Every structure is written in structure tokens, then in C-alpha cells.
Image 1: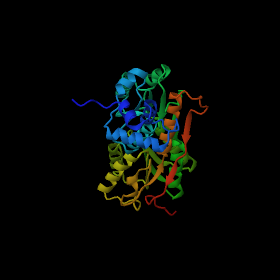
Image 2: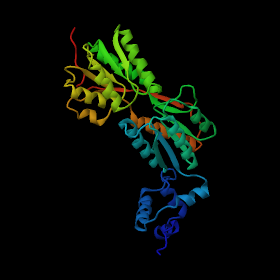
Image 3: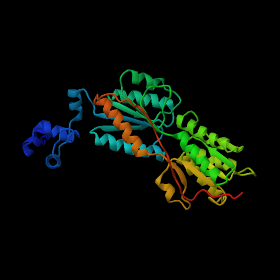
Image 4: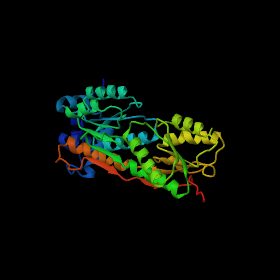
Length: 339
């Protein structure tokens, strides 16, 4: 049986100490100012010798797993899938490994996953909570597990979070429709209990209220394609159809688009559409959809930056809770209604 390659074999081949090699393999080259030429030589030797790190043994020795847990509500939702991709990239850049799971918007599944992650000795957790309960997250945080809340958060807790201005983004979206002459607007919302949804509904209602618009309605209860589809189908049965629809998530928008197509409703000639959350596919539709974009990449970078500073026991930051601005991505799905 062929002898397994060890870190000492890499040291013998490259001439570098096992300490230097370990630092390169653990993503700490920049921290210890190891030259790129040296890094390349070590990485080449690793490939040539087919070296595989024994992380289990390393964990036993250091007591650290070099693992970060990530829980999102749904990996089938493009927004959360994008978050998972960005977080995984940031985690990897810091020399850690990610365990990713989704809760399916179910708080009991979320609780189970959290306990499973803890049993795997994760060093930190980034979570987009369901939003229905918070005690299980609060308890684990108070017991010492570093946690960063992402997108969704609990206003009552001191746990660090990074999110976006959901209220302002929805307020801007509603005003865009109002400025284009729309006075009959339907808002299709997502998970009612989640903070982002509550704030988006609040921003939408504030805008239509300030404009003196009374012909509006908020419907729906999930960030899902099915929710967008069913609610759109129902509203199209009415004789007095709205002139505009505002969906509070891009999965809702996908369902809405399907229903509109089935009923031969044209966008924006018959009904205008704007959605919260941006995605690449919105640019490639027959009618590109105007959206309220969140800075996902920045959100993920900040979340990981907060978590790493806690793990490295750096000086405590005065800012722990960050709200970032949204941006309107103008496309062709909103028509102007002349008075």
C-alpha cells in the first residue's frame, strides 16, 4: 500500500519549514507575508505529491474545525442561492470550509440543523433565519457561538447583522409606479413574519398613503413561485384589474410572470411589473423586469468580515448592525399612464 504523503514530505521537496507550508495551506500567506513565488512552489508540490490534509487530526490537535455553518431559508430561491455562493467564496478566501443547509422556511428544521452544526464543532454561524422564532438562536449565541444574521434579523437582539434598507427600497419602488401614473397597485408579499417582508410592506404602504392612493392591496404569504402564480391568477379574475404589480421577491415575480403569460397579459402594455431583488435572468426576459437590487456581494463580504474579526478576537467593533442601501435597476417593465 502506497505511503500517504505528509506535510513533512512537502517540506523535504520544497525546502520550506512545515510551519510555512501549514500557513500557506490554511490561507494565511498574506497574514505572514509569504511571497507569491514561495506560495506557488508549495502549491505545486502539494499537487505533484497528491497531498490531502488530515483535517480531523488537525482538529483534534487545535480544538478548531476551521468550519463555518451557513443556514438559508431556501437554496431553490435564486436570491439565497446567490448568498450561499458568495458566502462560500468568502469563507474559502479566509481558509475555512462551509457547511451549507436550508431550512425550507421551517423553524423546526432550522433548530435541528443548528444542533447538527454545533455537533460538528463549527467555529461560527451565518444564518438567514426563518423569522418566526429567535430563542434557539439567542441561546446558542449567549453560550458563545459567534453568529452573524444575514438579510433577516431580530430587532430585539444584540446579535450582529448585515441587511439592506427594505423599507426604503419598497418605498422607492412604489413611488416609481406612482410617478408613472399608476393608481391601482397590487403588492404580492413573501413570508409575513420576516423582518424584510414587514419593512417592505411598510415602505409600500407609506408611499401609496402619501400619494393619497386608496386602490391598493397587499396579498400573498410566501417567497415562492407558487405564491406569485396563485395570487396573480386570482387578481386577474377581477373585472377591475390593477395597472401595476409589485412583487416583494424575485421568486414571486417568476410565478407572476407565468400567470400573466397564461392569460395573455402583456408587460408593460397591460400591466406594469416591478420586483424586489435583482437577478441575472430579469435582463433576458422578453420584457426585462425593473427591480430593486440588494448589494449581495457587499452584504456577504461584510458578514464574513464581522465573523472573522470575532473568531480572531480582534478589537471589538463599535458597528455591529449594518443596513445597506438598495438600487433601482431600470428596465422596460413599467409603463407610463397619462392622466
